[in-house]
Length: 185
Image (cartoon, rainbow, N blue to C red; front, side, top):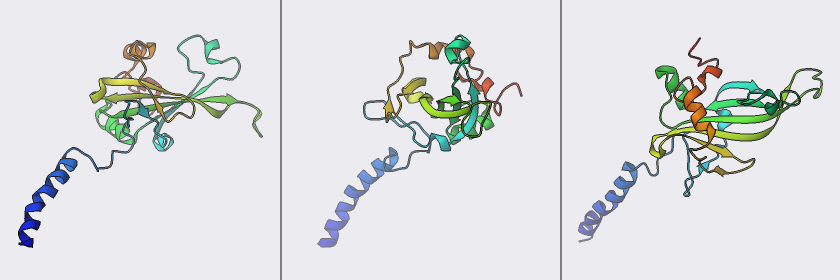
């Protein structure tokens, strides 16, 4: 009699386990893939500095040089991409779904320590994400305030969307500024 009760309960245990596994619950997410909070905000990828480094620029601006602080303390832009997306791009020449590009903006300074000329990077001023997520409508932008754990989606009316669509060399991204991926190599 006890054996019958145990066997009858086995399907009841298997069905929830199968449902969890088939929907991806309990499985680790791919490292570097975009994560979202319950409210739909993007969770800050705290490990982005371990991702693939694409480039660093100094005083990059879409406006006047003065707007970038080129005459005083220009900012550095560092770009990182999640490793799976980078490896896929190398094989296919396009960014796969779940690509996350991180733009880290840092201040600069000169005459620091023994440095008598040139510029060195200083504190983080801001972090932005350019994310390709088909489940959320394709490419999108998020801007993280300093120290923020998450960021809301920037409205599609922001200039970053149209600028990237018009000027991005590959799939709305500025690959033309990433020497190791440049299409003009």
